[in-house]
Image (cartoon, rainbow, N blue to C red; front, side):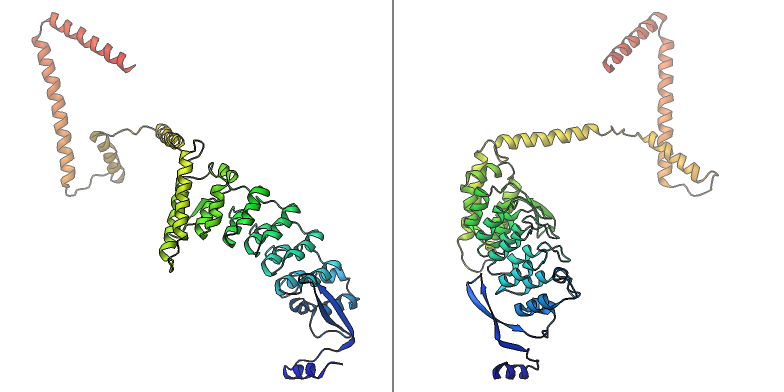
Length: 427
């Protein structure tokens, strides 16, 4: 029988006390804390639905529904989705219970719950466990044992490694477990970012960064998308820009001191990314309320990185490679200019022709109207040009008549020679 305290509490809260039997007490070991949990068995159907029992973490109620529902197969029951949230019981357990989660997950998996079931956002339980559980290692291992994929992607392309690197505190044990089970450390999300970017957003976690770079062989040269807060456009950047954005002094120092990281970074780091990183640090330094020397040290590291890459003949920042890039840019511009067709400059007479034709098409019949000053000017210039041509021809004919036949023959020969020279130069 329920105790007096239980009845009083239920009466005050207007809740019917569950019918229980004190002789049937379940003792479950919580593998997260290694502490025993005492649960009371239900003799009758619980007052809560199976979905509510999963949300509340009511292990006894879940056991009752699993063992006392004869109309539906337990596997079908455990993989049926909540009509309100479209989540399975496994999703509800993981997302709503921060304590005593391992017995709940184990109960569902042992009785047929699908470890790879997805919700409407394509999220699986192996994603959610790193986000919601304070100690996700055992639950993650259970899910992997029941065929959850270590490389499963959610709707944004995040893998379990992305979630563990971004949300676990500390992330090291879960990262090592996932990598040992076959997780790919270089898979990128919809923003082209690997788990390294999430780790730097999580904190200044040098041990986890060291593991991913030197043991798991994470690619440091991957460039993800960053939103420029001023232009509202995206730009590509490496983990150096991510470290500068979040002020991760120790992680940035580790990257610069690592030969493995520098061998990869020198192929992709450019002047634009370093300049933008320095601008981000200076902006955060100006908005910082306390006089923290961290930002000054980060600026010094970025300058040291730039100097190192400028001395490296294989880096993009070396003088030789800068010159090659400038020459390549100039050559591409020259090629694009050469491929453009030559534009002919039109003379005044050539431009007047189409204008006249347009007027004739628009007004085939002459219309009496007041002549504009521009039209008068064009007609006057046309008459002057014609008069100059006719005067020049008359002068030439006059000179030829005054010359003798012998002189005309000499002039003709000279003219022909000039024409031959000009034709040869033209060729």
